[in-house]
Length: 96
Length: 334
Image (cartoon, each protein chain N blue to C red):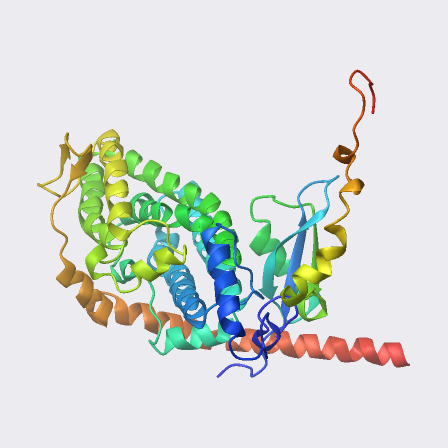
């Protein structure tokens, strides 16, 4: 009936306006990059939600594993001194 | 399968020794209880996954089947303005279907598989779309009542425990608001028009009111999936609760339209602070669900035909992509 190969999946990133980063909007199927861009335009920017679109083959994304999320992000957990609120400054001292 | 979506074999907890499941389930329960979102690669109970796929598939199918009753009127819209609006709305419904199919895909169930099941009659879509659109006013009644009921159902889904579903619903709800308002405005125009136009608007409301109330699903005590879905925070309010909310919203809106709702038992209940309304014909609901509604056969036949007749386009796109990839690779090695 139809082709046996399902179109690959693409992740879509949209820049909503100049000055902002591209943000993940969702995903879609398309046979190639050019069609993925066109489909992304029709699917994710029907109401002028974007001025620029990136499409990336989903298979090309490498993600951290939820299995190791604790150990993976653990190094940052015990370093509160990386935040400005860690430091006590005498009252009245300005511009710090 | 991909790294970011639903590789079930690579998801958290795969290949763990037995007994570790309980710890995973406890972590899942804690996340749900704390109102955290469950994301695609998190461990989740099989029944939660299955329940989500069932609901999201039904939802996605409803969006694309829902294009049919309205598309019926695109070529007969009374003005260019109305035609442009209706085309935009029908295109939105296709978009909503796609958001939901890709959200379902994050659970490891591909779009083709879901479409096959729809075409084989193994998965359902909302019964409302098995009613015919007999007049132009039906386009208005669908926007006001059917999309209105859908919004009432869908706004709480924006806080659903499954992240991708909740995110798809945020986008959908924003767009549905236009659907509802264009329908309301359409009905208002007819209602304030000639006596014949007013009558057409009233007739459409008469026919769509009860099926719209059925969209919230069976009463709570007869709803098969409700209790579990609420415990998992997929659902946030019961069917009857949402139905009541919808009735209370619609009554003043109908008054402003100058139209009546076809229910002699509909009246304000001072004590409850809500409207009482008449009994719903659940027999009719069950019949339509079983496939005996006015348009079940027509809708599914049309869907299958559209899919089959579109296959050459899909094939051509693949052939084009393959050819150009080959050309590019040839150039690279030349």
